[in-house]
Amino acid sequence: MKPQVDGAGYDLVIDSNGVTRPIQLKRSFKGAKTASQKVIFGSPRSQADALSGSCLSPRPLNSYLWFDSKPGKPLPSLSSYKIARHTKGNAKGEKAERPMLRVVPRSRFVQLPSIEAVLEQLFGPPKPRGSA
Image (cartoon, rainbow, N blue to C red; front, side, top):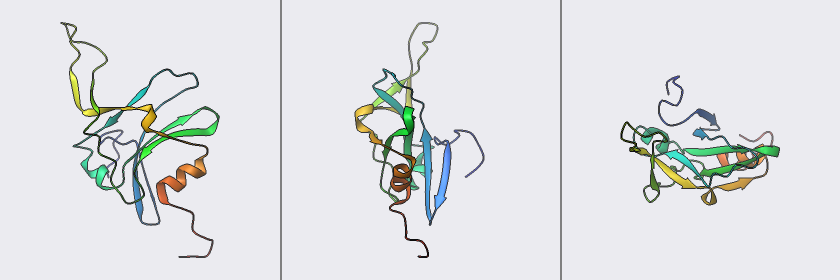
């Protein structure tokens, strides 16, 4: 991985116990009305997909919205989701497609109650102290 901000579709990479998790961070706030998130799909994400990609949206009061796979598994396929469009139109007012971004409904995200629950989703259940 190279130190580029969002250069390959992820914002943060965490490695623990041999599991590497590229994470897309999404912003959310209390009272947000958006019903979806735009998630990177396909190349250049392919490297991240192979490394158990995930998408995390911190929420108010320390809860999180989570879209991912199990540790060691690729990000679920996004091919069935709608292709995102640019938010601003060109000179003709046309909003071009962004083929590497897919619109994932918020209902497809799981709400997690704590950072501990996020860590368990990322890396599996905690290992007892002293175990290898």
